Structures are given as structure tokens and as C-alpha cells.
Amino acid sequence: MADDLNPLHLGQSSALPASPEEAVLDYVPNPREGSLYLVRFAAPEFTSLCPVTGQPDFAHIVIDYAPGASIVESKSLKLFLGAFRNHCGFHEDVTVGIGQRLMDEMKPVWLRIGGYWYPRGGIPIDVFWQSGEAPKGLWVPDQGVASYRGRG
Image (cartoon, helix red, strand yellow):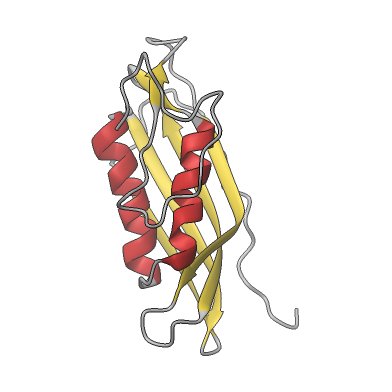
């Protein structure tokens, strides 16, 4: 985790990390600390590798959070998510791991993540995790990702 006052990626040229573990997420002070609001990041072309076959797995990842004292800097989040391209992991571990790392480091008021994975072996796998109940008064819209329908 980078220092709040000296983010590593903001305004800098940054290479894609070799792994999620090597990725450094930058956090900056929340300009609206004390206000209850929701931030949404969507990564519709997320990729990781199947730990069994080594083949790519694809997902639409949606991250919603209510900030506390800090917010995640979007470029560092993009680099972190991109680092999964060469990472082998089951859908459940990848999705929940992303949510838990953000929760542990950023310490938002509330966070949820939806991993909408495209079929592997003919079965789509959707994985959901949240830090607890949403705070009273927080507007939490539907994540807007339809269930996989195949031929429709």
C-alpha cells in the first residue's frame, strides 16, 4: 500500500505488475469523508487463469463500496486487476480475495463485489461477497449484470 500523500501510480508511467501480490494499490484521502455515498467500479473484461488447465477465464467484475477515510485510486486498481491475467485461481478465491484485500487495506464503511464468470465446462459461476449489511440510508443499486443465458 502506497502512502496516501505519495501515490505510486497517479500521474506516473506504470507497468503492469507481474502478480496480484506484487501490485500496490494506492489510496488517497476521501474528499467527502463523513458523507455516505457509493462508488462503483466495473471491469467487464477481467481475466485470470484456470488453475487446472492454465487457460484464460473471463469475468465481469463489479465492485461497490462506501468510502471511509480513503478511496482507492482508479489507475492502481486497474493495474491490480490487470495483474490477474497471469494468475491462476479458482473463481471463488479470485473474487473474494479482491474484495477482502480492498476491505483490509482501504477500510471502507462497506464493500461488496460481484464476480460474473463466463462458463467453464458449460457452467457459469457467479461469486458474491460483501463485508456485512449495507449502512442504513446508503443507496445500493442493482449491479446490472444479467445472469448468463447462453443461447437465450
